[in-house]
Amino acid sequence: MNPELGIREDVERVLIDEKVIEKRLDVMAEQIANDFPPGPILAVVLLKGALVFAADLLRRIPRPLEIECLNVASYHGGTESSGQVKFLDQHLPDVRGRHVLLLDDILDTGRTLRAVSDRLKEMGCAVVHTGVLLAKDKVRSAEVEADYVGFQIGDEFVVGYGLDFMGRYRNLPFVGVLKS
Ligand code: IMP
Ligand code: MG
Image (cartoon, rainbow, N blue to C red; front, side, top):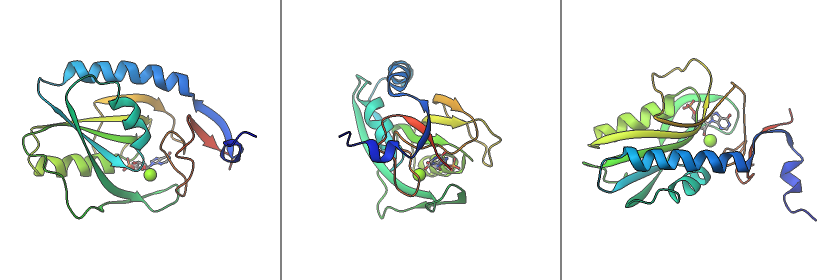
């Protein structure tokens, strides 16, 4: 029995398969490793969506690196952005003077990346570079683009490789579209 069958059955089509993601992450990791100035990198990972992407990307960066995670919520379980970004952590990491690589799963309206990078800058980061696995091809509500983008995709709702629908499908090893 295939133990993944349960969630794969809900997938209408695979948009980006595992092998393609792996190859792209090799390239992104090399760019990041070359771009950041000497000294330790501080990766700030937005939970939970960027968990899988960050785990695979950061292991490919052969440089001194620390990892912090931030819990933010912009969706409330559905497929529409709520328009508000909430910081859910009681304590935020000390980022003063650090070279930060801020990672999220997907750039959609742009509000999350905008709000978090603004907050990190207020908190005294030296530099904030942003990386996303996916960027939707659309007009953004917030003025922001990511420095590192894995893949540009159309404006449709996707799941897998960290991205969820109602908390599920994050563990699919590929990015796909659900049956409606
Ligand atoms: P933004 O603030 O609208 O750019 O949205 C970013 C957040 O919305 C991401 O961190 C995701 O958690 C979520 N999101 C946006 N689009 C999708 C999608 O297609 N699938 C799953 N989550 C999404
Ligand atoms: Mg999410």
